[in-house]
Image 1: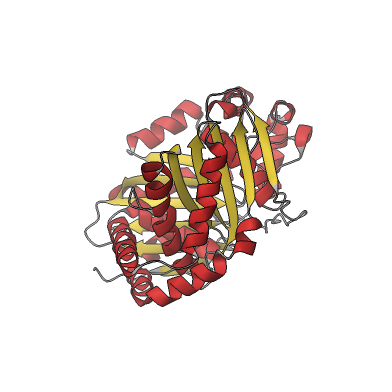
Image 2: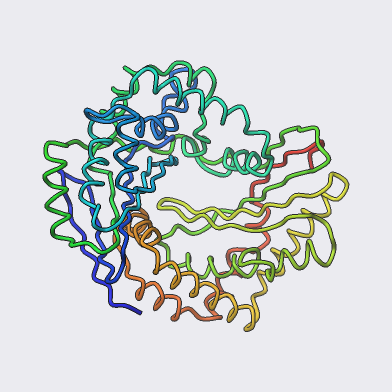
Length: 415
């Protein structure tokens, strides 16, 4: 494994900047998050969906460049870019040839500090947002994940971020400009960069480009605890989609790694997991089943999704609960070994990608408050023992915790 030296700086009056030079890389990737997430959006008709629209419209022109000119400038540099929004932040990722990193950063700084947010760009972005909102129920698997978040996550972080028709229609160029200026601040922003770059040179460049950018973002706070229980959304269909959610460790908790391995054995890591084998293959109760662990800075959530027929949906859920109870008795040595190999291979292969490393740097700074090298992450996995995983499984999946899980169902009948 190549030696890694990660430099972390504070620039522009508060933005955290982590840079990892990767010897031999031909590309560089920038992952830049700013604290403009859906949890801080206006409520309902006041502008719900604001961050979703902002994440799209900031690519439509910046500084002296119109939308077409800005897009052409990025294309001439060969920049592959994407934006996304979450409960906490808007994230822009951009990958370019390492030699083009400085010009790319200049364009991105223009985008963040001087977005144009013009009327015609707003109408195009609004129309895309309305289409996404209107098509939510067209993908029941995605829709049931939205419904489970409503009851499994505290408000306002349980908002799906797509907004409402009234909220999206209420947005104006003036309101978006004012909101961006108020919410997009250096303190709370994070940038991760990985590739064939000089950390000191990039730090000095960012100080110049972001000169005068100041301010502290106001982070949203929990207003209401998660309601949990169950939620049902009627949908005329020949399928029933269900999602069971269990509170789980935060990313920074010591229990996050044994929990991740337990989830891999139970419902992740391909088709060798227990849920796939017991619920789908042996009993034929569903056509799809799997488990995911989302570990954030403030909370974690494990979700189990299954798609079944209405006639077999209740039996599917009962079988899933049985497997959760069986997992509390522990994993076998063979399961543990396979899961460790799969987890490590994913980590090591991800280290070959500048995108994966830049995202890991930004993610670590946000969720843990410090960055980790690839070697440090692998070493942590190597220290994990079967006993630690089994001790954690016994605690995390005792009957009381399973019964406290939240359940969302989308289909013709409730469970």
